[in-house]
Image 1 (cartoon, rainbow, N blue to C red):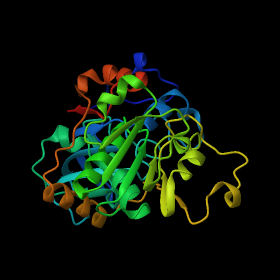
Image 2: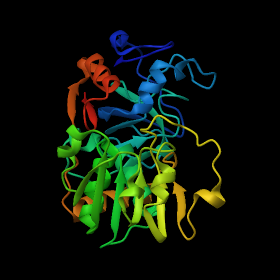
Image 3: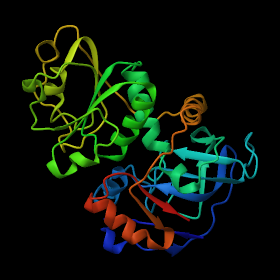
Image 4: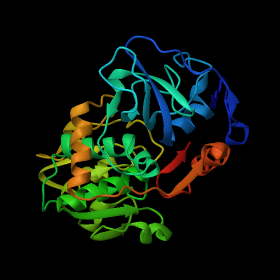
Amino acid sequence: MKAVKIDRITPADEVSLTEVPIPSVRPGWVLVKVKAFGMNHSEKILRLGEIEADYISRPVIPGIECVGEVEDPSDTDLKKGDKIIAMMGGMGRSFDGSYAEYALLPVHHVFKVETDLPWDELASIPETYLTAWGSLFECLQLKKDETLLIRGATCALGYAAIDIAKALGCRIIGTTHRENKLGLLKGVDEAVLDNGELSEKGYIVDKALDLIGPKSILDTLRTVKKGGIVCDTGILGGVFELNGFDPIKDIPNGVYLTGYFSNYPTQELVDSIFQFIRDHDLHPTYAQRFDFKEIRDACKALDEGKSNGKIVVVI
């Protein structure tokens, strides 16, 4: 089969397809015929640095998510031909991931789906919608008619959160720090140019999803009303830790701070997401689509960060 396999720091210009054996099936694992996959910032991090970490199983096929069909179910309850999505659980790091025509994946991170969506639309869902769904409902406990602030909304996760919250019936304030991206915030009730000090502008909301991360989280906490919740899910701001954080002084009285970690999806959670998509006739969108033979160009687009949404690769 054709696949991308790396064992060292690999800029996009050096990404290429190579011939490798189709994986051999073993108990508890499922062989998936990959139809498409979405690309993620974490795969860029892997190629450009993390590949040298001791915990990476080198050489490795990158890719933390995919959509496809079961080719060989092994000893699992799945059946050949089942339509599935798969994500996380060590894909593309602890074991080979989705940048390949076939992927051997642990059954506990392979989920059967009932959907008529085409492969490219389906590929924009797994990790992105899982994270948006978990952030909005498990963490923020979002409800109809609430006002939701999405900080750093012009990214794939931001667009998914907008789609879900709008379908739920929320009022949405979306932000970007680039004026030329304000027009990309379709579906929001108010598009705001973020200067880093939203609390100084008097915004008071029910719930806030912060995709900027530690760089903005203290200010975000001051935009939420008493009894409200802030969920920190992204690190678009490029700051990974909050040094000197004092929870007693930095979290306003009566405001709750949480975060969402997407490494533990379940079939029940996946079923809920797809039922919601069907009930509200949602059609997940993506920014760019590439054929697998164009994987180098897809990686360049990922590294440049100019796609304004999800990048999908179709095999």
